[in-house]
Length: 339
Image (cartoon, rainbow, N blue to C red):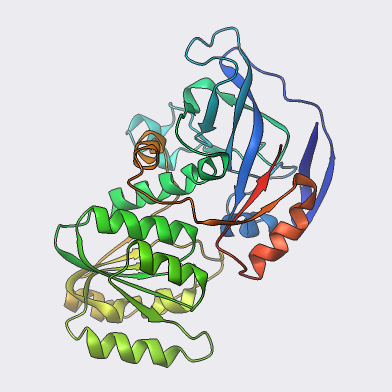
């Protein structure tokens, strides 16, 4: 089969590799779509738990083409998505029912083979059939699962005011979940463009333009128009600068959520006195486990709108062009699509 294979950070090729062998508890999936996102740029650089050699791709959907001898829950021909995380179940954290911190954490497309290939083998317990989504929409299930996990961490109180930095694909999904689950007023701050236009139509009560060349403009507007601050400030861009300034927008007793994916060596300069004096709660939200069923419920029930988000589709052999388009911040959501 054809696949994108990294031999080392920044070094990948489109080449032939063997079709994965299927264990008794696994299914073989013919990949139809696989999204790419900012995390893939970090993986490209060797960050974010990446291990090589590696087939990337953690947002994949496809058709079951064969099932292992022990699999009874899935059938050949079913349209499915797969939770990319695999957990050991027996380490210190798994035994404490904290699987996200599994000491043997595996993730398809991050440290084991992912979906930027014609076929992928996945444990049947991690595979979810779907009925009412297009292949393009199905590529958004994994980002939706991450946003659902984010909502668990945020623990939003009904009637809250929320400031969300970022209108990328996950930010657009997260904004809709915030609106559905208790935000009385949602402000989204992001650079001008189609992403901000879409989140404005789908979820935001107010948008604030971020000028990457003049950070003072959005600061002045937010501090002037929201003098008491926000109940929740969510930084979903991965910008250390925006993460550093997030504290100033949180009201006393407020919450700051570190949601974006940042460079591993990034640092911020926060005032411990401000955190102490305002009694701020600061939390992080990393990836997801066990959220795919709820993500599918939102998407198949059409509570979340993702059908306008895919703006670019590439062939598997054009993965390099897809990465460059992503790096250039063009469009909204990019996917690799196979016929």
